[in-house]
Image (cartoon, rainbow, N blue to C red; front, side, top):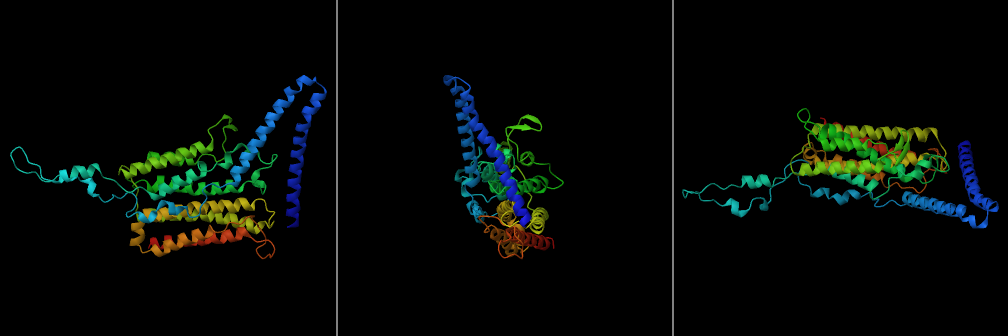
Length: 399
């Protein structure tokens, strides 16, 4: 442990020393240049330097602000969707309201022969026909909006890519927690988009892939670190947030089409089983990452990668908490018919419980230690509890 702590400080101080040396040389250079030049021409050197310093400090100020302020972060964000008010599952036709069939159309209309025709509410009902949009799609689009519109997408910001004097931010304990959290949320949304395309948004074997869902999945697979310009390949690029915003737009288009009964959301039990199974596998992979870091590294507060692992897992559970809550509304009929309402609610409660863990400093100490806690082991415990509930839920649904 002492070796890892000393190695950490050596890396930090070495990076800071190199950075300060470069910064000091840059600040001293214009004064040296002035000594060898005429006084009136000194501003030609000093003015660009001043502009550059203002730009650098402005960029770093904005970057630090964006990494430290988590706008609209709320573990209970699911309440904003009012899922309890949904009375039918996703894609099912909503009950007709009295306004659907006007009174004038329900009355018998005389014919030219004087005979009365039968009431004709069918055409009016068809004209006003509407279906229940998907809560899962709503939440997925909302999580994208939270990541790239309500907050800046940290992973593709220029200063994040440049690192701390050349050292990757993920290898430092500074300014990278929000980026890891956002990537965890995005992992949950990506997994959901894949399932929407492959199973939920189509009738298996009898319908084609929905184009809006396909576009959303493709855009969400885009590189998480792209800025406006890149070296591989060399040239201008479209930044990551633009692709994710397009994905959110495509998800909303699908839901609009679904509300008009022009698209499909297949709420069969086997689709729900597969969806739960894929989520459990995804969370299981994160559990393995937490276990590997917790078992093989015991740097305590000085493990510079522990915070990345922790906040990625936290973000993933943050995303899946909303998505699973929404899936419960979309598949409410299946959940009632299979008598798993209590187990489903327990799974959501376990997921929400994990979101209460918000330590100020992430520690990866020895699990049997008494000075530095092991936050990775704690998060890993909650992740395994959620996964265990999902596996049990899948088993009961599959009976």
